[in-house]
Image (cartoon, rainbow, N blue to C red; front, side, top):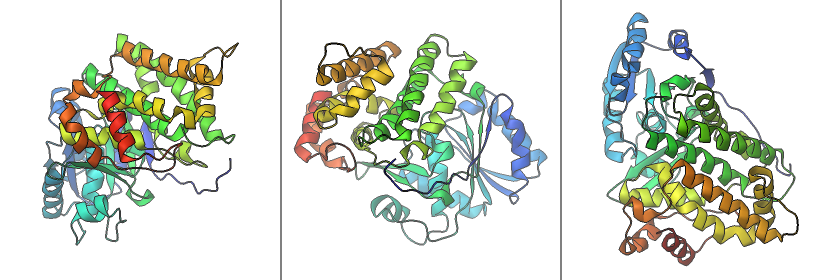
Length: 388
């Protein structure tokens, strides 16, 4: 561990069957006015909405609903949420849904009392809040983003063709999150698989940096092996509680800041995927899957030692009689086979990207540092073309 760091994660988690029973205990710590945030209405079909509203009523809360949060929350939707939170004088924002709903709730929480344009302040200039923040609680119904235990918030601006994430400090982390794996059973298989790859990408983007002997990398390898194993079970039987619970727990630890400690990190895959989504509105995890292998093949020569380790420690590739490059490439081949086996989208053309769109997507891609190679615009274009 070569890096110096501080570590604090203030989010309280309730995990497992009947975790929702703890909601009333948490609600007692907040005022009467609750902004209930959710997505397209699936929680009304599966009964989660009724259970949550019943608890809110029993706790004497005044509830204002903010429904219709889309998979890639927009600046227009954010403006609507800000208005609802202000008009209701919200004391707590309760997000019931997946990562997009949790991300959106956090964006609203830092924007309600912001005197400036939140998009410009938080997502263009990347400034931190200097106003009162409305606390957020999460009830998770889809896993992948880790938003239930971090300060991340991703917002899309269709007019500017930008999808940008801001990782806020611990004061924006959810105060509590409720994680019942059974709440994830009814999401469509496509969304489940997309979330699984989002988890993998989060781990890899923290793993593929540095060459020191770092405890965080050992943790990452264990999380990856667990995810790979459980994903294979879940795609065959989405109601397998053990597999889904392992995936849910892995998702949380993949992006709650723990495995980034003592390391630099490389978030270029997310920048590429988010740029694709800004132009197509495609599902987040699938955009990551479609660009990952071309990106990793591109940077492999610069991080060969770590890619070799990944192949051996995560995928079990044999080392005997092979060059480091051969071992590393076999690791990426094993990863590709697994991706195809679970049903991931493997190219951006399947998400609606045409060759004519590549230049615009390149311009929308933020260039990150911290990984084995800082890309140029020409390299981004090459990777995107190889992703078609």
